[in-house]
Amino acid sequence: MNPATWLDALPSPLAYALVSLVLAAEGVSLAGMFVPGTATVLALGHLTASGAVPPACAVLCAALAALCADSLGFAAGRRAARTGNGVPGRMARAVHRLPGVLSRTPSASVVPAARWFTGPRTLVPRLVGLGPTSYPHFVRWAAPGAVAWSAGLVLAGRWIGTATTAIGTGLSHLVSW
Image (cartoon, rainbow, N blue to C red; front, top):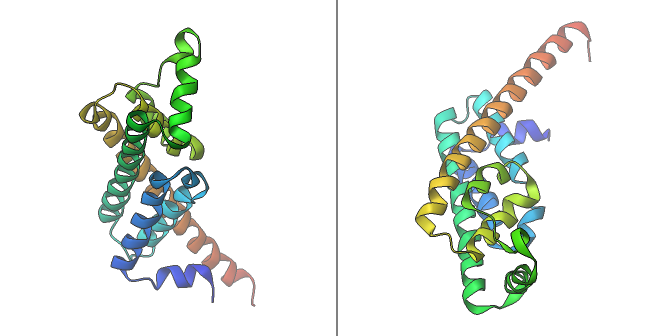
């Protein structure tokens, strides 16, 4: 079965659940750096091009799941700063031994930019959680970043889905399979 056909056949609630699980998995552990979050949101955008999912619902679902992932990462960093256990705890101890500016944890203002890159999307919320930033201050930066990232990728996926459909239709008129 063609992957695009399989994707188009997904019921909307199942598509939302899959996207939410994949994006939340990015924030749960450091292994989240290897979760295909960007590709998942692009696939959701493809579903909007085929009409299977409304675009506004796709953006809302992806943004909420991305904010959940960032919050989970922030909570993991906060927990590690409190207990000093695990990899984030060792990172916190190592960061405090660095000189000057390097010893500071990143500010929450870095979170929206980090959302666009695979590794930093998982690490930066944890690092911000290690520092003195409060959760409300963190969310004030993370929420707009999650919405912009989700909207951009859903629209890009929609454009890719529309373009591939148009190209496929044009080719089928030119070439008889």
